[in-house]
Length: 121
Image 1 (cartoon, rainbow, N blue to C red):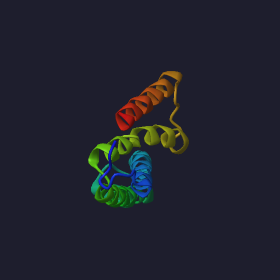
Image 2: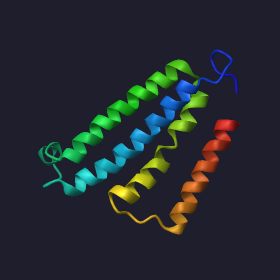
Image 3: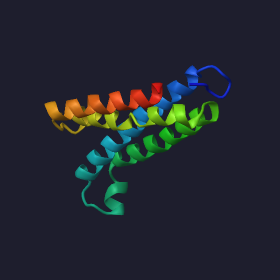
Image 4: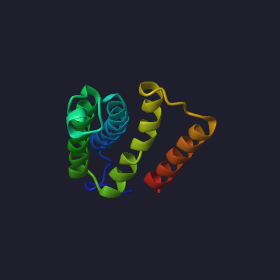
C-alpha cells in the first residue's frame, strides 16, 4: 500500500481506529439510551443521558474520521473504520449485558480477519 506521501501515516491510522471505537461505542449507547428512555419519542430520547452521549460520540467519531481521511487514502482508512462493528459487539457485551455467544465471537473474529485482508491487501 502506498499512502498519499509514500509512508503509512501512523496518526491517520490511530485516528481511524479511534473513530471506529467511538462509532461502535456510540451505537451501543444508542441502544442503551433507547431501552432506558421513558418513551420512544424525540422528547424521550432527548431526556436520555446515554442517548445524548451517543450522539456526541457519533459526532466526534466523524471528526476523527474526516481528519484521518485528510491524511491518508480512503483505501487505507475505510477498512479500519469497518472495525466499528467489532467494537459495537464488544462494548454491547459490557454496557448492555448482551451475551456474546461462541458463534458471535467467531463472527467477530471472521469480520476482523476479513477487514485485515482488505487492509493489508
